[in-house]
Image 1 (cartoon, rainbow, N blue to C red):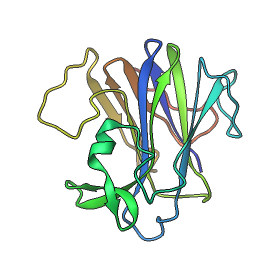
Image 2: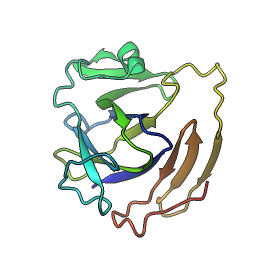
Image 3: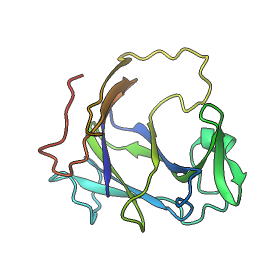
Image 4: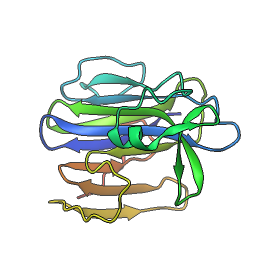
Length: 190
């Protein structure tokens, strides 16, 4: 199963952080994840079908979660530690250990829409979390951050095809439905 989200880059060189992990739940100890970023300025290919005419950037998650050497985000490097033999972070709000599987900083080469596909490496299905970000990679919630376009819109429907949107300083994050047909993907006006 592939999970998609869409990011709009307003300028060449925009930064995108992609974090993917799993919670401390039975059956998730062997889950490993990958991501593929489709968009202007990338010229790679992928086995995953992306939007027509867009190149791909393969973003491999780690195969070894017994160390935290794969972490790229400065926030992750400071926060994660080895817990029960895996690279983990204790989330005090949810009172649960979160295990990192992919932690990458990506530079988006051009202005435009980028589509990010997240999928398990081996399993057909897995429960996981995605942490996309482009600013303020911090777990410090007291400092007010200003955003020129700071707004949030969200909606949720009863069949678990929830869609959320928010705009963050320089980029627009739009949740998409589970469809891999890009003509049917949900678009929310910003």
